[in-house]
Figure (tube, one colour):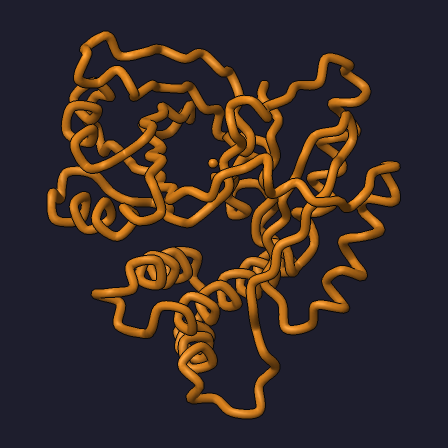
Length: 272
C-alpha cells in the first residue's frame, strides 16, 4: 500500500541475506489501503447497496481483465469469496462475471480509471475508480478537490505500482511467518495492527504477484484476505502533515472521495 502508513516504526533485518527487507507497523484504520468498508460504515441498507455495487463492479473488471477461470484468475476468486462473505446475492455475483465475460449484452462499458492530484497539505493522491461513465465520475471527484482548495495534477511519478497482499497469520507468530514468507519474492513484509487478528502485508514486484499468490495458497498455512495491484509512494516522495487542522482537512478530503460510489481506492504519499 505506503499509500497510508501509520505508526511508521521500521525494524531492519540484521542478517546479511535479508538486509533488503524491513518490517513496518501498519495501523488498520482510517483511509488506509486495506480499509474495509464492511467495518468502516454502519450496516444499513444504503451501505449494503454501496458495497454490492463496488464489489460487483470490481468483479466485472477482474473477469474482463483476467478471464473467468478462478483457478488462474486468483484476484477474481478472492473478490468472489469476499462478496459471498458479505452476503452479496449469488445472482449479483454471477451477473457481474457475465458482464466481464461479455455474456450479458447491451451493458455499459465498465472500466478502471485513475485520477491524480494534490490534497490538503500538498499530499499527493492517486484515486482508483471503477465506472461505466467517466464523465459522471470526474464530475463527482473534481468538486472534492475544489471544496478543499486542492487541485488535480499529475502525481503518479511519485509512486511505484506494486503487488499487495494482506495475509491472516491464523494464530502463527510474525517471526515464524516472516521466515516462511521471505523466500516468496517479497520486497517488504509489514505487520498490520488490528485488534481481532494478526495480519501481515506483503509488497511484491507486479511480475511476482501470481507466483506469490500461488505459493501462499499451496503452502496452506496462512490465509490471503486481500490482494491487489496498488500504488506505493517512493521513499523520497513521502510527506507528512504537522499541522492538526491541515491533517483534519486531509482526512475529510479523502473520506469525501472514498464515499463516492465509483471510487475503489485512494492512495497517498502521507507518512504518519
